[in-house]
Picture 1 (cartoon, rainbow, N blue to C red):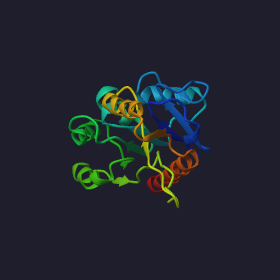
Picture 2: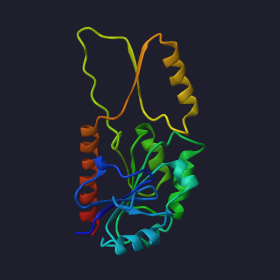
Picture 3: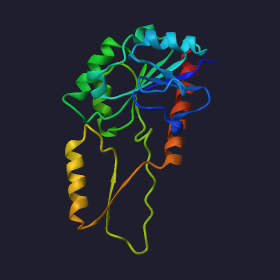
Picture 4: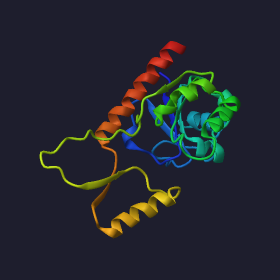
Length: 212
């Protein structure tokens, strides 16, 4: 059976791995998946073939408006199989829905899955001519809160503090330095994150069976 090819811009993530799935992208180590130095479908297909994988299957393209503006994946018309975009961070940058719509006109996909921003679902559906689904937070699902019998006053930051979040970093560092309230950061719960990604893979399998 052809694989599900997860194209993304991060490093290899074992929590996203699943039988029949191969991770590909510019930051993937060649020992773990398919390292695609340039975001190009013809290059991806060539590398899949040279590594013993079929050059077709379900393509899950994980991206966001920032990446669509800076280093977009090109050549989607040359992919043989369903093309599904998992799009996050619609709240980042100028006119993100315009960016998404313009990209899809040039690089068509068969469906779009919003991994964040469920409140924007209707707006995105109005702008796009392909099915748009939303299952936030999909790739990143956090543990459910449990009420304590004796509540504690703590501030928990859940999210990324990377090179593109300078203002967020300033706020977090200021809160830590003040020490007026207990403060901590947290990563997504690994088991819940894996289960959520498995749901996406199952949805893709259904999508593939209905389009072949």
